[in-house]
Amino acid sequence: MKDMKKLAAVFAMLAMVASSGTGYAATMVTADGSSTVYPISEAVAEEFGKANSDVQITVGVSGTGGGFKRFCKGETDISNASRPIKSKEADMCFEEGIEYIEIPVAYDGLAVMVSPQNDWVTSLTVKELNKIWAPDSQGKVTNWNQVRSSFPDKPLKLVGPGTDSGTFDYFTEVINGKSGSSRGDYVASEDDNVLVQGISSDKNALGYFGLAYYEENKDKLKLVPVDDENEGNGSGAVAPSMETVLAGTYQPLARPIFIYVSKKAAERPEIQAFIEFYLKNAATLSEEVGYVPLSAQAYELALARFKAGKAGSLFKKGTAGIKLEDALSK
Amino acid sequence: MIQGAQPIQKIIAAQKRNEAIFRVVAIAAVAISLATLGALLFDAFSDGLRRLDWQFLTSFPSRKPERAGILAAIAGSFYVVSLTSAISIPLGIGAAVYLEEYAKNNRFNRMIEVNITNLAGVPSIIYGILGLELFVRMMKLDRSLMAGALTLSLLALPTVIISAREAIRTVPSSIRQAAYAVGATRWQTTRDHVLPLAFPGIMTGIILAISRAIGETAPLIMIGALTYVAFLPTGLDSPFTVMPIQIFNWVSRPQKGFFECAAAGIVVLLILTLMLNGLAIILRNYYQRKFSVRSL
Image (cartoon, rainbow over all chains, first blue to last red):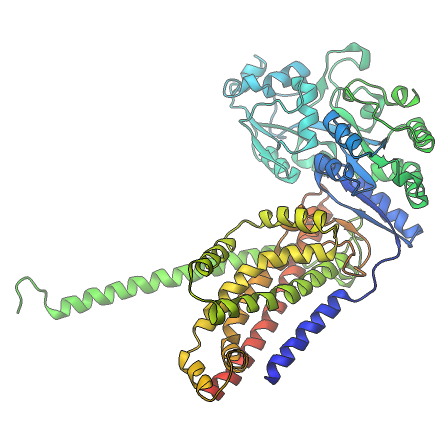
């Protein structure tokens, strides 16, 4: 009997420990969305938090699509997105009366990789990449000499991100012409570190993923320069780097990544302070975590759009081939 | 002698051989699982120990791996598991007592029993979806500690109920009859005799359920537990993160430093789980000694 009472007391104590404190009164900034944008938002949140300890910032990783679902229900203030909002998602926001301001924060380059032991590939054209990854190639294009006749007779092993990733969406859009359309017979993983392993350990492998993962694994991977056969933006094959991404010559495999801010949330002073801080520091912080910063002009234009409260998306038809500065100054 | 029967020596030799084979198989089974555990532990410790220091335990997440820490996740896990225990243990034991001691053996109750058993096998992500709709959206708890704890409680309940029922069933009915004979009510009998005797068995179930809850990621990601949280939970409505989510995030980062952070996080999670289990086992043994001597 006594012991049962003791037990009951233990439970009561557990409950009290768990419920101690009286709710949080501090101001909150809530962000969620893409795991690609996460490192930048995390860096900004970390630095902003140091300067403003009374503001509590949370960042989640529900993926770009998952982030928009919550954003359009009014559950978050900011949505991280590795691609522009889709019309379906925009409709969802419209129905719930959520207006949003679109802010590009950095570029992300997609890198095409082979193993360092691969001595025959020095560059690939977009057409060749399309031949490798097109849905029709499934089960047919299985040898390197089918990609280019001068390549050796070696089996073609493909590695790439899974279908839930924004990287997959963007790569298939610019290489295969339609977002989400790709051959399915390749080794897919949502974990980019697994992709690094897959490519570095097989001399016949080819794969693609974010440039940041190449930067950290240079010794294990060989970068493949890509030729879009368009003399207008750099002739010949271009390798991704800070310079080529920023200059717009590493096309089409570089894309801007975004944050979306709810217009209603943007009325709050802490959100305004956070976004201003974000845009003023995005250049240094995004480079620090492995991304390519936008031009200073682009950040200024984005900040002006935010301050003017201009809602809606500039990239309803995607981001491929659009110069950010031109789009933002409209 | 029966025709065709073997001499007794032969039979005995065959039996001994079988015995020896069985022994080897049993030892191999233990060795394989221990070796796997050992390899896992060695791997986590060799990568993680270098990174595991006071700074790691007392820092919030950071973009720089050498400055990153697991404090918010430790606090989040601690609060969530405490709350989950406080919710699921009394409810689970209560349900088990009802089903074993009070419920009539009719079709309805048998249906409940079958359903509880089935619930124990439901994948955890399903509980996450239920938690998202029920607690986060309908009850408007948002992505709070309370929503997380309620979701994990749903996950833990079937295990607690099933093991508590098993434990209650092992209490000899002579104990109940003796209590009734001296005029005790059903509640008095349950409280003073059945539950104390069943307690060690109930504890085993609780250990299993809570150990599972502390390592769960999927349902919490589903209800929207966060990754970057640079403050400690301040109340039941506070946003939170937990250790498995933080570890998962570190593993998927490109920088090698985060890989060490993840390994160190795994070591912390392992140590905390072992401490929790150790506490539960000490409690169980204490009650086992106490009650078995008195009542039998």
